[in-house]
Amino acid sequence: GAVVSQHPSWVICKSGTSVKIECRSLDFQATTMFWYRQFPKQSLMLMATSNEGSKATYEQGVEKDKFLINHASLTLSTLTVTSAHPEDSSFYICSASHPAGVENEQFFGPGTRLTVL
Amino acid sequence: QQQVKQSPQSLIVQKGGISIINCAYENTAFDYFPWYQQFPGKGPALLIAIRPDVSEKKEGRFTISFNKSAKQFSLHIMDSQPGDSATYFCAAGSGYSSASKIIFGSGTRLSIRP
Image (cartoon, rainbow over all chains, first blue to last red; front, side):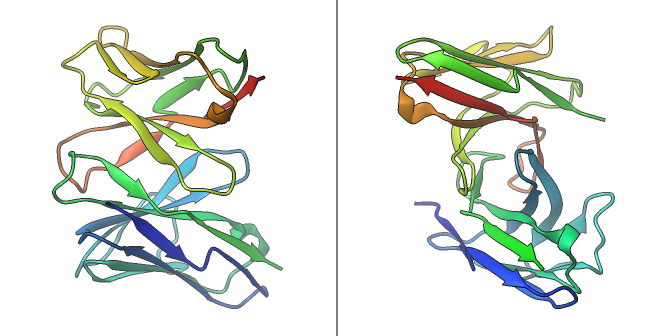
């Protein structure tokens, strides 16, 4: 149980275009989802916390107008990278908290590799 | 400001040996300390986690040692196997809510030599 999926697993886009990444909790309802960014050989950096039915809370330094997050249902959160540029190329990972699970425990998706040309 | 400091950056251990990774934190409000394992191109997976009310937790070959006064905790992998070769992240969080954030350490690339 507690499986989180992401789609797509990888995406290549042209500079200036927008890309949407989906994060789904497959076998549980997640009231909270988290979005992270990971550059090669670096740690995971939290971008934002997403709560179902409310606006996302962004970490300091993350542009909310560039990284649009929508948590429309208890099983789906989306991250849209708007007007993507090469510096946005990264590994984007989402996680979800299981409401009946161990407190604080987050279940991570497999990640989405974004390459902006 | 790095809230969770992790060392070493990389580690090579012979098969069957003990792998030890250390972390230190600054924020005394942290009360949840998980360790994650990540393989290339994959998302991290929870290995083991500890709360500050105990000094040690063991699950199979993985043990967390926790020193509250020193604000340090470590991961010990006993009888290390080639399949353990991965990047390991310590992390820290506070509160008991499913919405609580966690902060990751910088990671340790572990290689187990056959």
